[in-house]
Image (cartoon, rainbow, N blue to C red; front, side, top):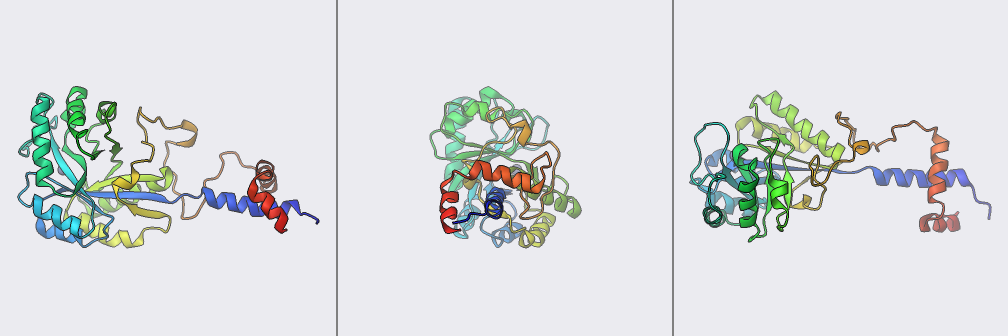
Length: 300
Ligand SMILES: [Zn+2]
């Protein structure tokens, strides 16, 4: 049977290109639950893939964690950790000077106050998370549980990844804060930034708070999420590579520093332009021995 090479190459090329178009995964965690039931109840009415982090000593901790779980949201313990700046602290805020026993006691109390939690992230914590000995005590205590640790990244040199070495604790990192500025346009911009990062890198984690403008932006923008963005829970990202850390260094040739917006469905193109048929020939050459091609050859 006469076999037409180029049309088949085009078919294979199209198949391979569509396979490389990746769906970005976006996880959104709303922090500081337990103090503002009116706003928090609005969060719980949003898509169940939004996750919530509950302050363990907040008056509504147990109730909101239970409600969040019952409405299908993933629950995290929002564990207070010492910041570098002077500000009012939550009860049981972890400090680097605390003993391992004290940290383990606070964690036990947090676990008991926040039922259904499957992970933990830090509230504040620029001082605590930048202390390797401090974070090693946290990770050793966490190792007794089956929690992941989502680093809120309140400081650039957080030690969560090296501190988790030798433990079973999986570490994730926040990429975008949605509402450092509560101005509605700023929140919108941050939401868009999180979407672009998810598209570029395959996934991104954004953290927001139950502020009225954050709620408005989520209500407006979640339904407009592009078809190639999937809202996920942080626990669905535990097998993804960490971005921009020493534990899993980014490959420079694949991780351009500049943000590049990719419209839905657009495959990443190679940096060097290649004439269309030459590209397809190259695809053909590399794929012609595959089982798929052999099967297609038989069909054509
Ligand atoms: Zn917080």
